[in-house]
Length: 300
Length: 291
Image (cartoon, rainbow over all chains, first blue to last red):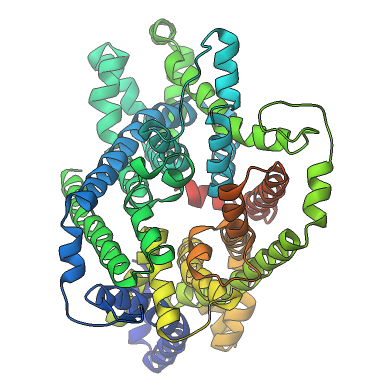
């Protein structure tokens, strides 16, 4: 807003207009290298994926561009559809679990963290910058048949041992562990921004902390929760490391199929079609998400 | 802020309201749950570190402290060249992403033309694109051009992915900086470049340092993009670890993992602390947490 005012004032001064025009040109030049980089290496490479998804593999096993729908038709069988549905179920479960785990944590830190608030957020953030691969690997050794968790269970009396790895539970747990911070941070931020006097008022009005929580706190932090849902769902749906290290072929997700097409089957056009399906799923989700946030903005 | 103070005052001065609060008490559930959460958050990390010092070749029985896995790691020429490769990728990607990301942030803050806004929107897309999509796209782009996959292709892919992070962090700092400061510098006779060099850059320096450290940590640890864009020899450390843990289980991986953890923890901790050393309250912590 202050820049609008500035521009208005500047426009009335003699010679000012020319100066601001040269300025804009300078900043315009600055835009060129990063814009060119993004267009060459990001936009065009995404377009190549879309183009190759209509391509074929020629006789000597090399991918070729084309206009065939064969790759998409090939995806229309139960094997692939099962994996699509499984990926959706795992990702939605992950989002819901992250919500139930993340909300109390964000709440406790934001409203009862006191002077340790920043230290707690740092303690939360730091592990998530540690290699995702190493963290998944750590869980795979912990949960293995001879791992520490099974040893602990053994000493408590469960002598049969529990098979954790290769189960859907392990894969979803890995996804939750991997991405829960993306749920906590936006909820934390919206709780921080929230006027705590509202909670006080709510307590006077409803006489019950639980009713206050659902009538006041939850609606006030809906934007944060929505942001968290987006930030968890996006990486979860495209993940293949958790299913690779904590699961097996029976728990493979769409990411594992993509990875297989590029590194094992060497069928790049089919892999591209799978990638396009993943992008479309996320696009549909984004549209619903943007609608929801717009409605939220209109209401508040 | 003011509301919080009023609320606390109200709490301490009015005995009735204090009584009501103490009946409710702290939400023990949320606090206990959070404590449990932090324990589970750190258990796998602590286990990796602990077993990296194990004298036995076991991932479940601890036989006493030993540095044998670190010795093995530092004598393994393959792992060492991967480590050097990862450090090189992260350094170059950090410089490249800082340069391009800062240009982008400066331009987007100052130019509000339609193409600039379009670039601004496009530059946010990598942040909401799953890495596997970016990885596949980069792989097809490079192979389509007939480029041989190598560390160079990894660096290009990592820069593309990191520009957005830098731009977001630097824009956060720029938007809180008044444009009038630069205006004043120009009124005092600075050229646009001088104003940028002597006024704007020093102001956004803490954000640049924080962004650089975060990009280094992210790229150094990154697996998915590196996996899709790397050649055969040398491979980045994360890709090499991935192929090792799929083949065998070796406690040496715990030692490598511990070193990687140490690097990222150090970098992230620095990126949290450094902006505060400059007397700024807007460290990357606030940017990350959106505070």
